[in-house]
Structures are given as structure tokens and as C-alpha cells.
Length: 96
Image (cartoon, one colour):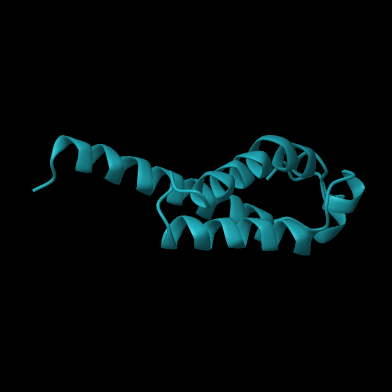
């Protein structure tokens, strides 16, 4: 059974892990041309950043020396890059 501290840590760990997975998968499904058109780092660059952030989050503690920059990298992608890339459509009228 978890203690209160262990339960809080488990919730934080899985929340941060889900955030990193979301950032990596979102970067994976976006078209490469959208990153360049939005004036952001290329798709392989963001895949590397979010992939390393996901790996570090999974291996190390989220509040460790390497865990905090990994969390920041995933949040930067989701807050800054994702809206810019998502706003560019592939040319069809689908809003999906």
C-alpha cells in the first residue's frame, strides 16, 4: 500500500510521463513541412528533444536533476510549438 507521499509521487510521475508521451506522439504525427512553415525547429529536432525527454522521464525521477529539464522540454513543445504547427493545415478543409 502506498503512503501519502508515495501516492503523490506516483500521481506526479504518471502525469509527467503522460505529458512526455503526449508531446512525443504529437510531434510524431505532425507533418515535417509544418515545423519549417511555422518557423520552429525541424521535426527530427523536436522528435529527438521530446523522445529524450520521454526516456529521461521514464528512467529518472521527474523531479531529479535531469527530470526537470525533460519536463520543461515537453511543456515547451506543447505550449509553444504544438499550437503553431497545429494551426497550419495540410491544404485540405478538414479541421481534424
